Image 1: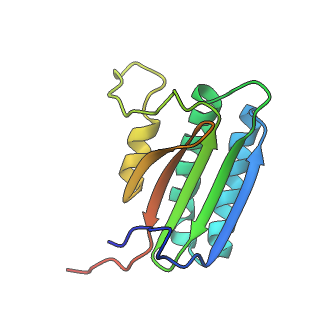
Image 2 (image 1 turned 30 degrees about the horizontal axis):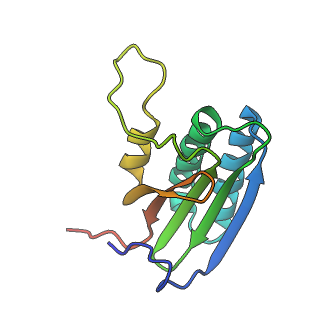
Length: 143
Protein backbone atom coordinates (compact mmCIF):
# COMPACT_ATOMS: atom_id res chain seq x y z
CA UNK A 1 0.00 0.00 0.00
CA UNK A 2 1.25 3.49 -0.80
CA UNK A 3 2.34 5.66 2.07
CA UNK A 4 2.70 9.40 2.38
CA UNK A 5 6.07 10.88 1.47
CA UNK A 6 5.96 14.68 1.90
CA UNK A 7 8.52 15.33 -0.84
CA UNK A 8 6.77 13.29 -3.54
CA UNK A 9 3.02 13.13 -2.84
CA UNK A 10 0.81 15.93 -4.11
CA UNK A 11 -1.47 17.16 -1.34
CA UNK A 12 -4.99 17.44 -2.78
CA UNK A 13 -6.77 18.74 0.33
CA UNK A 14 -5.45 20.01 3.62
CA UNK A 15 -6.80 21.33 6.91
CA UNK A 16 -4.94 22.61 9.95
CA UNK A 17 -6.47 23.93 13.15
CA UNK A 18 -5.16 24.67 16.64
CA UNK A 19 -7.26 23.68 19.64
CA UNK A 20 -7.32 24.77 23.25
CA UNK A 21 -6.23 22.01 25.66
CA UNK A 22 -9.71 21.24 26.99
CA UNK A 23 -11.65 17.96 26.74
CA UNK A 24 -14.32 19.58 24.55
CA UNK A 25 -11.64 20.24 21.91
CA UNK A 26 -11.17 16.51 21.36
CA UNK A 27 -14.80 16.05 20.34
CA UNK A 28 -14.65 19.20 18.19
CA UNK A 29 -11.57 17.86 16.37
CA UNK A 30 -13.22 14.45 15.93
CA UNK A 31 -16.41 15.91 14.43
CA UNK A 32 -14.48 18.32 12.17
CA UNK A 33 -12.36 15.45 10.86
CA UNK A 34 -15.37 13.25 10.09
CA UNK A 35 -17.09 16.11 8.26
CA UNK A 36 -14.03 17.13 6.23
CA UNK A 37 -13.03 13.60 5.22
CA UNK A 38 -16.59 12.97 4.05
CA UNK A 39 -16.66 16.26 2.13
CA UNK A 40 -13.32 15.38 0.56
CA UNK A 41 -14.94 12.32 -1.00
CA UNK A 42 -13.92 9.57 1.44
CA UNK A 43 -16.92 8.93 3.70
CA UNK A 44 -15.87 5.28 4.03
CA UNK A 45 -12.82 6.21 6.11
CA UNK A 46 -14.33 9.22 7.91
CA UNK A 47 -15.18 7.13 10.98
CA UNK A 48 -11.69 5.63 11.22
CA UNK A 49 -10.11 9.05 10.70
CA UNK A 50 -12.25 10.67 13.39
CA UNK A 51 -11.45 7.84 15.83
CA UNK A 52 -7.71 8.24 15.19
CA UNK A 53 -8.00 12.01 15.72
CA UNK A 54 -9.93 11.41 18.92
CA UNK A 55 -7.27 9.06 20.29
CA UNK A 56 -4.29 11.22 19.29
CA UNK A 57 -5.92 14.47 20.43
CA UNK A 58 -6.88 12.80 23.71
CA UNK A 59 -3.26 11.77 24.19
CA UNK A 60 -2.11 15.31 23.38
CA UNK A 61 -4.50 16.61 26.00
CA UNK A 62 -3.58 14.05 28.68
CA UNK A 63 0.13 13.58 28.08
CA UNK A 64 1.32 16.46 25.90
CA UNK A 65 -0.33 19.40 27.58
CA UNK A 66 1.74 22.43 28.52
CA UNK A 67 0.03 25.32 30.28
CA UNK A 68 -0.84 28.05 27.79
CA UNK A 69 0.00 25.96 24.69
CA UNK A 70 -2.43 24.70 22.06
CA UNK A 71 -2.41 21.39 20.23
CA UNK A 72 -2.78 21.15 16.45
CA UNK A 73 -4.65 18.74 14.22
CA UNK A 74 -3.41 18.69 10.63
CA UNK A 75 -5.06 16.60 7.91
CA UNK A 76 -3.47 15.99 4.51
CA UNK A 77 -5.17 14.15 1.68
CA UNK A 78 -3.24 12.72 -1.25
CA UNK A 79 -4.53 10.41 -3.97
CA UNK A 80 -3.62 7.35 -1.92
CA UNK A 81 -3.35 8.38 1.76
CA UNK A 82 -5.07 10.45 4.41
CA UNK A 83 -2.39 11.61 6.85
CA UNK A 84 -3.46 12.72 10.30
CA UNK A 85 -1.01 14.69 12.44
CA UNK A 86 -1.54 15.84 16.02
CA UNK A 87 1.15 18.10 17.46
CA UNK A 88 1.65 19.09 21.08
CA UNK A 89 4.29 20.93 23.10
CA UNK A 90 5.79 18.02 25.11
CA UNK A 91 8.54 16.35 23.15
CA UNK A 92 9.82 14.33 26.10
CA UNK A 93 6.51 12.42 26.34
CA UNK A 94 6.64 10.04 23.37
CA UNK A 95 3.70 7.65 23.03
CA UNK A 96 4.25 3.92 23.22
CA UNK A 97 1.62 1.23 22.78
CA UNK A 98 1.08 -0.92 25.84
CA UNK A 99 -0.99 -3.88 26.85
CA UNK A 100 -3.38 -2.73 29.58
CA UNK A 101 -5.00 -5.18 31.94
CA UNK A 102 -8.63 -6.09 31.23
CA UNK A 103 -9.83 -3.99 34.17
CA UNK A 104 -7.84 -0.85 33.24
CA UNK A 105 -9.91 2.05 31.97
CA UNK A 106 -7.19 3.65 29.83
CA UNK A 107 -4.25 2.56 27.68
CA UNK A 108 -5.81 1.25 24.47
CA UNK A 109 -5.67 4.36 22.28
CA UNK A 110 -2.48 3.56 20.39
CA UNK A 111 -3.62 -0.03 19.91
CA UNK A 112 -6.71 1.38 18.18
CA UNK A 113 -4.58 3.73 16.07
CA UNK A 114 -2.29 0.85 15.11
CA UNK A 115 -5.27 -1.28 14.08
CA UNK A 116 -6.83 1.45 11.90
CA UNK A 117 -3.75 3.02 10.30
CA UNK A 118 -1.46 1.53 7.65
CA UNK A 119 1.37 3.07 9.66
CA UNK A 120 1.93 5.62 12.39
CA UNK A 121 4.82 7.24 14.21
CA UNK A 122 6.25 10.20 16.07
CA UNK A 123 8.26 13.09 14.64
CA UNK A 124 10.14 15.39 17.02
CA UNK A 125 9.73 19.14 16.61
CA UNK A 126 11.82 22.05 17.84
CA UNK A 127 9.22 22.39 20.59
CA UNK A 128 7.18 19.26 21.19
CA UNK A 129 6.31 16.42 18.85
CA UNK A 130 3.91 15.35 16.14
CA UNK A 131 2.18 11.99 16.32
CA UNK A 132 0.94 10.96 12.89
CA UNK A 133 -1.07 8.16 11.36
CA UNK A 134 -1.88 7.29 7.77
CA UNK A 135 -5.04 5.70 6.41
CA UNK A 136 -4.70 4.08 3.01
CA UNK A 137 -7.23 5.06 0.35
CA UNK A 138 -6.33 2.39 -2.18
CA UNK A 139 -8.76 -0.14 -3.54
CA UNK A 140 -9.26 -3.36 -1.63
CA UNK A 141 -8.61 -6.61 -3.44
CA UNK A 142 -11.50 -8.98 -3.90
CA UNK A 143 -9.79 -12.38 -3.86
